[in-house]
Image (cartoon, rainbow, N blue to C red; front, top):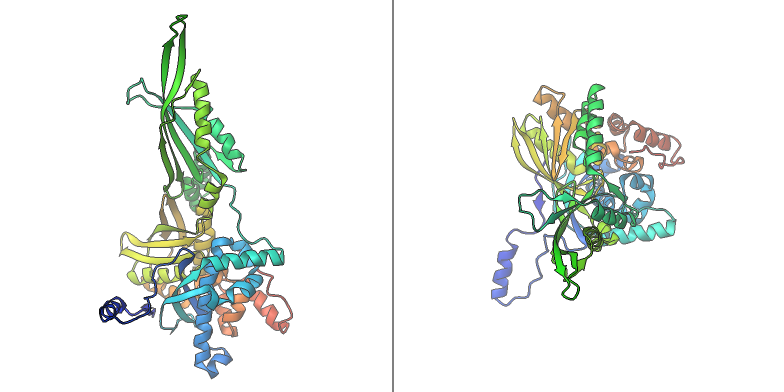
Length: 484
């Protein structure tokens, strides 16, 4: 049975502090339960094999190993903010030696921890919530990258950016539909392309995704069809509207009429296409200035809007540390299954925190999930890093992605009719996090042949590497790992 987390800080601390201040006593400040600027709050699960010989002799060693694995997992999740999953796995030994083993230096404090419990899967479990220094992890990774000559820190990426600039004549009424301005858009696209980023067409991407969705349906790939149907086009969308006004002037001396164009105002905003969040918005009324033609005015506005966006602006958004989504899982038949699903999520590398918000046996379970990093193709990321390990645990595709829109994720669970069978599989099968665990970690937490036999069901290649390593007396390398 999963035990509830208990807070480390006393709940009456604030009351005691107030009384102490009234009495004039000097008391230490209460630990801050909110992360500082260079820290992040992380939930993690620690595992250990209770049948290991060393643990049979001393239960205190078992508890220490369990808590140490939980700390390592918390730090590994923070590393995942800066290093993509493939690089982390490929360089796991280096990262473990230089970062994961520094659990006390990188963890500011353990905020909560559960009582350890023996699961029906044969492993000892513990859950913790810790405050971890992101700055220390990032600095250690950069120093390690320099010393070891390996490329670890994820680059800013190659985002897809769409542009839509509309123009409106101030002399027309407010009900007239504004028109797109290819001139202003092309100037802005040149500016974006100068960063090395890709300019994306929302319209073409939408048509392409729909066409791929139809092809997938024809071939019976419903999951792939849903993925294409809800796949976002661009990663960022720049939207602007310009209002201009024609001016007719007559020169007094010659009587010649001159037509000028002036921009009365313009607005611009940048959206995160995955979440719908407005990352930037601005309204401006330009200084008095006129142009000889409407095209010249629109070229100027394209340049002015481009000046609002620098390479650093997009890099800052791409390196955003965490993202919070509302996750709805349809098909979980009972509340106990919803609770066990939450526990599975806590163990996964990309999931920093998760809360079960609501449950309904007809509508499903609702969660708030905080993911590490800012994946450009979030749908693909969910399929590979979250749903794939969960499906490995159940031995078949029972979780499928229905949609990712704005900050809402919908997942369908299906394949089992009896709730009791679902609960049994959740409890008796190894944690889904071990489906993507490296052989190095498996070698540490699965000490006996019995525990490895269970893990082999969801991670056969990883277990094969561990067995070869042990058979050789530790002479073979554990770096030969699967591609996750």
